[in-house]
Length: 176
Image 1 (spheres, rainbow, N blue to C red):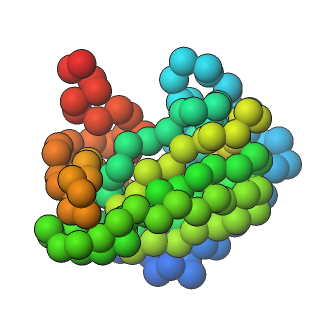
Image 2: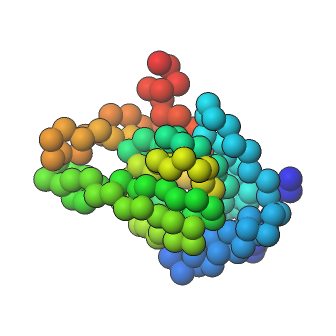
Image 3: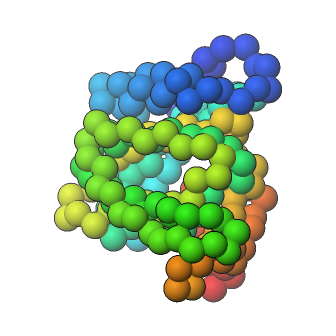
């Protein structure tokens, strides 16, 4: 698979509208069969399908009960769209710094697109019997991931990881 180039490298953060355009393009390619996702029942499968200085794009497949952990994107903004199936997103509604909040769940179905800013904290899971496929774009490309737990109505950061693979397991899962 060839990594594509969308535009000259400038090292800038894309706007939400620009990120949406990027995701729409790659989601259309995914729906057209340009990429062939793998459905691995043991681990969530993912592949970077585009990267430059401004943005990175990932194709991810999700089988039943696979998901991320509660996390942010280390200061990057993003957009994701569901290309096939349905995903449940658990979004932290509250401050990231000890104030009261809660997780709000939202089902995202084929064609749904979510845009988020650099302080967005969420967990994404497939609770459906059928596999799901999604396309995610981050700008600037992710270099740091923060992982969280909730204690009552408080969000608690439990780990941070410098990474060029935002879909990798959190540091605690790697050592466990």
